[in-house]
Image (cartoon, rainbow, N blue to C red; front, side, top):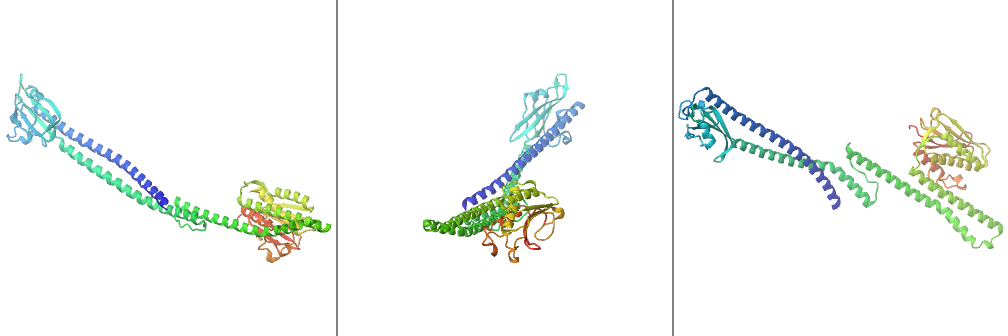
Length: 476
């Protein structure tokens, strides 16, 4: 039981892990692409904004003669010349800091060269400059001057660390969201796998019960119209067929054992008499040998019919397109040679069908042998009638659209009480028990008819005799 539970738990785990893995892969991919696109958009937007600030400052100092005092934080209107959300630091003509920014920005040799440049609007930029705990991007723009002397420069800085902090927070939230989605997908996958495998566990339990108890009549309570439901119904039908097959085999063995006792007992008795055969009169010896021959032949016929009956149930012979009238002609030829009786075949309608020729030949032969046995010494012909769908008659077991095979004789007929049991295995009417035979011939006819989608039938014939036959195919 532990192995079974482990196996099913493994199936649920595999399903849940697979579901979570797919969800994780999709979530990670979507999250990564979303974060990357958002980060690129934010960084590009920040860079564009800073580039616009620097460009505006360059245009301002080129179009107007401006001095460091114009950018001083102590001058009125400094909020107009200082760009918003930026740190501004003013450098003097020698590159010295005349108005420090907040925080103070570092001044490099390149910045000092810009400050002494007489050309207005020259700029130098520095990326990822660490100022204290923050990271800035700095641009230094010259104010211009006369001849070889400049009036100074303005440094504009924009903090990028706050943007990176924002992106890191976005990254953390994205990771948390992906983790939550993966966990939720795993839990949902586990629930879904448990729901799906619940009916599979029922099937597994039923299979284990069958293996443990060997009882095939177990009802499988599986519902649904999906693949699992279809599997459950197919499993239930399979168990039903196996149970029926087991019951048929058990009944066949029991019936065969019962029928085999009589000839075996008689053989054993006659064999015991062989020990004193020298003491018996010649006539008794001849009777004894004849009895042994008859009993051996009946025993052989019984065994052969049992084998034929079992083989007929297996349906191993493939179907092919044949004309049943041709099969009837072949049977009639053999029957004339064996019995010396006149056997005629009457055919009407379409008699071609998809069938197993050997099985049909066996069934028709059994019917003819049965007729000749009960009509022993008769002078009228035994008739084999094969009627196609166009002229098929109703009643007596016939089916609309079926091919009907009948064997008609003028024997003593069948008693009304025997008609219903005539095709049972080993059943023999009271007036037939003294005749040779095993009682399996008509049972084989019924099995062949059922295997071909038809049915067997028996009727009393007008004017005396019997009509016994079967149908092939057709709709009930």
